[in-house]
Length: 313
Image 1: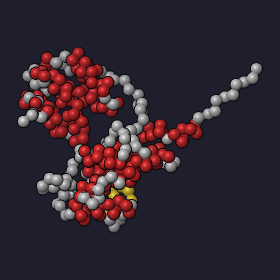
Image 2: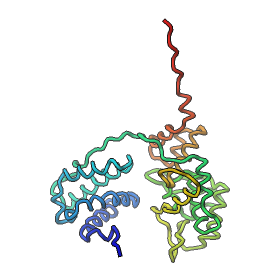
Image 3: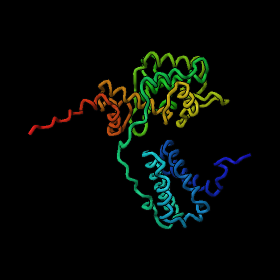
Image 4: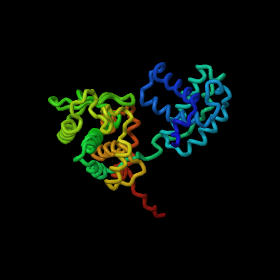
């Protein structure tokens, strides 16, 4: 049997990574989503170090090796991924120095990668494509009913996939006709009207698929026995790529976040203020929302001035 990537990591390296992740969780009380980001960034770095990536040998690590690793990796990464890489490595290096695995602090060896805020366009899809995507799940099946309800929540309220996967049953208040989502990324809790299409999709999922399984979470796994909550990092995976393909949507980013971008762009095109969109999307800083002004072509055209006529001498 071919060893998996995880199997190929030596026990000592796994121990070092495990110690770091345990430090984040229990000493710094870092959010689970951030812990996952740190693991994805630090693990390949430790693999690149080979035999140095052990508690007893890490002291041989030098600044040049850290600098060269970041420089070699960064051209292939997006702005957000570059930020995750550098912040994660700095976090790990601080941990290693505190534990005594590094004789001197090497945080400054992680280079500062220049990048301009809002340097690219948001990776979204059109609203017409969102409609086609919502038709892709086969609602005659259990997975189709569940996935349709999850996608409809994102398309209706613009929430993140993590807020959907961790949605609690008691957050859906049928009598009051409201639905509440937990805060995400330092934002605020969100409460919306429970509109009829969403209520119908949720009822179809609850009555025909979920049943009365004893969990607080609304959405559960389907294939596993016993069923369990999806968890914050369940992003529908390959199913979502299948839905994009089925809907005939050709885009490099086939994820749930593209739907969220479409919601924001649609609100902006309808004249909704940036402040209101920021509140609806749960953005902690309004600057995060300004990127959507770059794709509102109708509004951008109103700013264009006619080329001045040539002045006759």
